[in-house]
Length: 421
Picture (cartoon, rainbow, N blue to C red):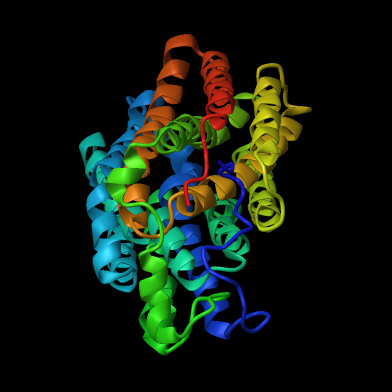
């Protein structure tokens, strides 16, 4: 069998215009914006407010605050199979528009919270945002529009998750530095999702056949391309019986625990090392800018290089960066953070691409939804447990040790992943 990384062979021949119709790339841009705004506001950018919130609510511990992330991602995981079915049935345009409205309402409400129960209710609602305009929607949307260069297109789209952290966390911290309260900043941020709503309303189409176009690189006519692609691959029952599927799912769970726990606590960790709030928020850019470069570059690599060496390299160097965090101080911690970001970015792209290409598009919504059950739970657990470990030991050392163990286990699991279509 071929390895999961052997993504250069398309299920159908790749012909057509060299760069495709402009709508192919407009769709990729919209998918990127979905991730920039949804992930950037719900998961990464919001950490810029942590210090101010802990100061106002002095009876909250870091574990209490970070439990919000577990609530959001656990609910995301539990509901993901249902939303996967909706993606397969009704497409993504309506879901994206709903997600942006919910996000705006939640951020406005965030500025009025009075106790931790209010916080947890809002973060439960955030799960709707991640499901309606988050990762699964973006990956399936791009996959429907591309056969050739699918790795490149997905790589560009998932850059949005890193771009959100690189842009929004410094933006929010600058608002606070200019004298705005965290409550006022939250309510101002509620306007940001309107840009995505308008893009979805006027430009987004679920599939190229909605415009009489073909997926980029598809060798067939527009009327049959959607049916041919959507029926290519394993059924849901066939896929979940494979060792490859569960290996991918647990790799996602372990690595999401690691990166979500790491990034959600990074601002507070850097402040513990002596960074100011603005410098610590800028430290998120040191994680996310290399990550977005890695996502794009490894998307290109996935279309050209076969074998699992790239996957192994990504995780082994990410493991080296995490090991560096165990001993890093203020003078050299940014080097380790940059290495982690770059290698995670590349692996993140390859993981999403392989989850589609390994089994085909036939049941992609359900399969990605099932994987999300584990990776969302892992990510949420990582956010909360990392904060709780700090509360128990007064440092993040033991939490970083757990990250190292989980990434090492993921390296072992890569050997169990094979290509099935």
